[in-house]
Image (tube, rainbow, N blue to C red):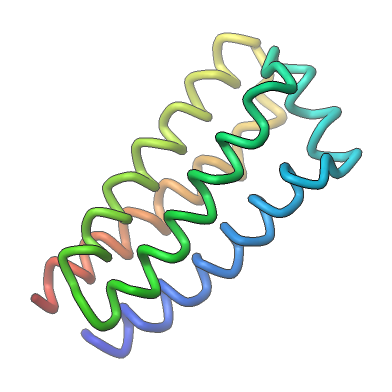
Length: 116
């Protein structure tokens, strides 16, 4: 189970860092999609910081599991918020990615709890 946690946490951390970086540098594809669902520019740095902090928490959770568990909870909550935002904007095309990340975040959370 520990190896599974390391693999899932590491891969999810890479995805979160990439997503956080894209928001931070205002990647055109990300910016366009987020404006479409009503996310203001002023939120980009905060959302980016949350994603990068979650990635760091997952990696730190390899060595100190409670931090990884907390990061997993935060990731699930963050992407539930993303799904709700897409649903409010009636943007069903944007739902697959945050939904998958909820599942992967939940897997990291469950694996983290299972290996305490």
